[in-house]
Length: 245
Picture 1 (tube, rainbow, N blue to C red):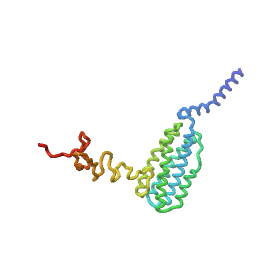
Picture 2: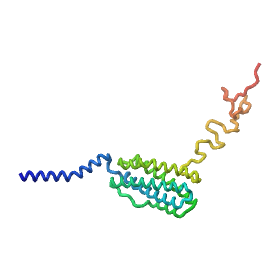
Picture 3: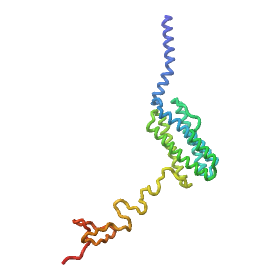
Picture 4: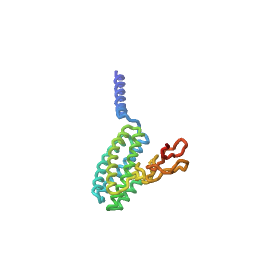
């Protein structure tokens, strides 16, 4: 009888020892995720550095900005990127991804440059650098949405995208007010309107006469629009002549 009790005790201990592993497996199944891919890891690390840079840049804008809109936008960036990064940190912890503790070398160089200027120069350089960094952040996010493997990491990207897009739109509007060039903005000749003096396809330039034929029966006089009359069967342009009686 004591042997039966001993076996029951051992079986109970085995069940208890397997419970944590079973619970962890169930949590993974409920999360509906696979192990994070290299894309997922790189995204979490890179977007974390973006957030660290934006928080630092936002604080600089509030301290050094000459334009009140620069200061206000900087404060907005600090709030939004702090919230975004909290989600990034929580997600990275849940999937076992370690995060860097500082911006990368390029980002630190941008922050150093901003610390060295002031007044209106700071405003223009801040807006210009922020436009570039937010465009890069959108590319990071879109790559994760299209190529990521872990559903929770992809959700981080999907939640961040509208925030970053709204920031970029606000930066574009501010850049236009301050006269800052927006990267990727088409010039006047790329707007779809023809350049002055360049005719649209299939038309002649204003004031430029069409070709003049010198064959028999042609007067050589262009029509009212600068385009000659339609050629006759012989290939020559026939001008209306006097009526034949």
